[in-house]
Length: 377
Image 1 (cartoon, rainbow, N blue to C red):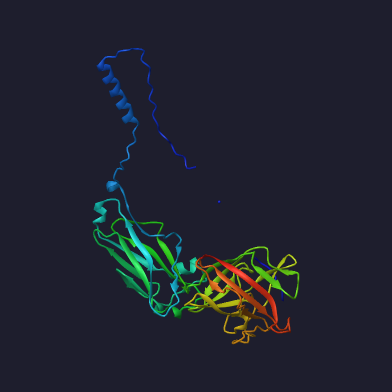
Image 2 (cartoon, helix red, strand yellow):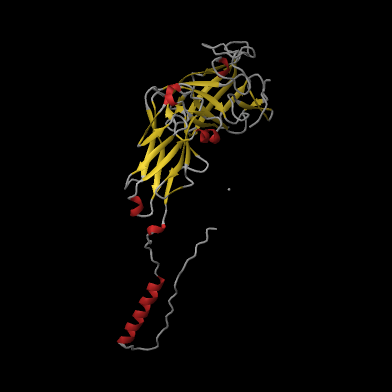
C-alpha cells in the first residue's frame, strides 16, 4: 500500500469400455455344449476389455537425466533459514540425482560437475548477499576446485544415484539478520551419456532467524485509539507484518503494506491511509516464557538504518528510545503481551508523545492487538 505519511489463475481423458450384448433365449432347455460356447465367447470379450496395467521397461531406449531436486532453469530459490545462534547449524542445500532408465546405466560410472554459481545468486535476487566463504563450510562427496565461483566434481560410482551438498554455518550471529544470503549451484557437465535436466540450478537462500521471526497479520478488528484526533481511526483492512530477527530475542516489526515495506503503523485519517512518522516497533521476547519483555521505538534507536526515508539519527537511544519528535513505544503492562500456543502474538501498547500530550503519562495512542501468525518469512 502506497500512502502518505501523517507527518510530513483440458486434460482430456479417453475412457475405453466394452459393452456386452446378450439375448434372451426363449428356450427352456439348452444343450450343455452351447453353454460352454457362450462362456468361451464371454471370456474372450472380457479379456479384450481388460486393461493391461503392467508397464513395459524402457530398456536401452531411455536416457539418464541429471538434475537437482527442486532445481530449475533459471535457478529456483530454496529457502533454508538457520537459527540465530553462536553454534553450528547445518542445512541440506543440494540434492543431486541421476534418474537412470535401466540397470545397465545405473552400473556405469558417471562424473558430474556443479558450479558454485555466484551469477545465479545475483540473477535470482540482486538483494542477496553472497555468503562469505569464512562463514560456512560444505560437506559433500565431491571435490571443490577453486574458491568462490569454482566447481565441484562428483563421481557417481556403479549403483549410486544420489549426492548431497550440506552447508554448515558455525556461527549464525555473524550474519546480519535483516539480510538474506545466497549460495548458487548449477550442473554444468555430465559424462557417460548423461543428459542435464532443466532442473539444473538452485539458489539457496539463507537467513538467520530467531523463534519469533515470521509473517503475521494485524487484523482489522484490533483496537486503535488516538486521543488527539477523532478522525484518526483503525484502518479498515488487515496489515501484514514481518518480524525480522535482529538478535537472539529481538525482532524489528516491518509493515509489508506500508509503501512497499517499512517500519511504521498505518491508520485512517478520515478514510485516507496515513501513518505516524518517526514511529515503529522493536520487540524483545523472553525465551523462557515466550512473553514480550519490552518494546521500543525503532526511530529512537540511532543504531538502526533509515526506513521509509526517515532517519533514526535523531533518536535518543536507551533507555527511552525517543524519536526526534518525542515519540516512544511503551508496553502496556495490563495486556497479555505474550506469544500464544498457535504462535499468534497478543500485544497491548502505547504511543507516548509528550510534545502532543504534555500531561504525563503523555499517552497519545492506545493499541490492543492480536497479530495472527501466517507463516515463516
